[in-house]
Image (cartoon, rainbow over all chains, first blue to last red; front, top):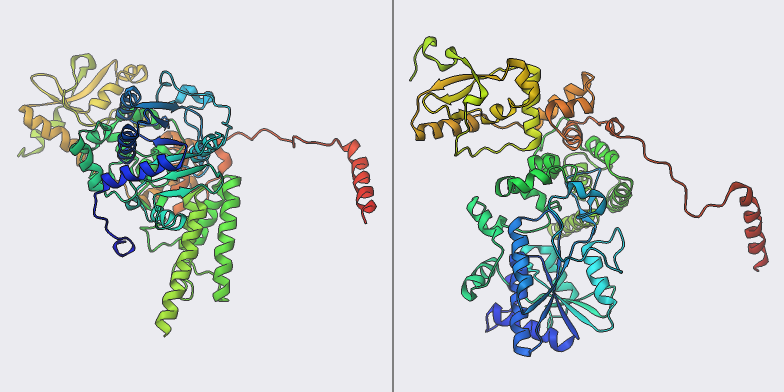
Length: 382
Length: 192
């Protein structure tokens, strides 16, 4: 990563404030998308500090409540809502969220009015539960951009996304933006909305140093996780039932037993994922030798998916197999990666296990694997 | 060390009314709903198979707090007239704490593969998914994934009702459809 970037003569806090300043100067509105997590705290503080300098207070902040969140997060967001510098909109809409715990119920809807009896917490006071732009089936990212796009003015949506968190995010920042303004990512769909990443280059250490240095308030859920012995890297406040997050689902049982007691009954598969998310039942790996063929597992898992998911998997598999067939007339091997394409049913099984709307990415990973393998083969040939 | 079968606590099990015992104030083990239900089922179906370990002087439970809680269930009360099996031990507070944690932690973990094999064997022995769910306190998702990992499909239909029938929102009744098709055919012909 190091050689892709040049080091600047000022620190990340100065940079973050500068980036937000550019956002204020370039766009009519600046809105902070706030999750209550540590990254979005840094983004929020940078925006407040800049707005103060520019006399643009209060800062408009949007918080999407995903229901299955620790009490400390709720308390922290309440404190932020009371800040005089902030005008916070608290959304409790049944926006479609991912349930990676289950192959048969790949989605869930926080605060869905029909499921009131199994909500993990009651609806907070003074929150937005109805919105003219909301339609059932929308996801947070889609709704938040759509809502801002409907405004006559232009908006920069400030998000606490850091590229250290994931390679995908790094790529998104690299590809979607020119080098001058690496901190803006224009929306594909809406011309008057851009996403702004003022803390994109912050390291995990910066995220922990800044609150101490500047005396910021923060989400005390991190203290609970710290006390329960979780490493700093695994301390996250992310949606509970997503693809990556379910790997840490078991931490809810240790850190927030009362919350977990309700979460078990909230979405199908929660208890199963907490037990097995890091085993072959969810990752598809770990068990290298198997007396059961991967193709058989693939077919069983495939049959269990919802019709929509099955369509997605079918398309993804067709693409990967057609690329495979471009390089070799051989059928897809079961366990050992094919020497020409590095593909096998064991890898394709992962697409089924991912179970749901993330298939696109799994397929991209597979096709990328093939390309990288071809590049290696060709370089080796020379 | 306690030498000889005569000196083992298990040899001196006594039946005590559950109301005479109390929970300790340090138990780190939390049992969640599904596991607690499973424990009750275990006692109801298999009967009392293990005594609670209780401090002789204070009558504070060292091991078996969840079984003691489960014994408040009317079905379990009825089995023994609210009596629970107990062995009394002498222990300092620290030793009691060691003892509590050892009873809980010294039990190993279930391997994914052997669990899969058991689920497959149960299904092949004719047990329904519904039955296994209740007997082992598992979700359908867990049974399906375990079986899948060992190459056995679990019939999805087993624990769900049939879905409601649906028809398209835009629906042309059959009687009208013929004329609609005829009109469409005319239009396409009319276009050069």
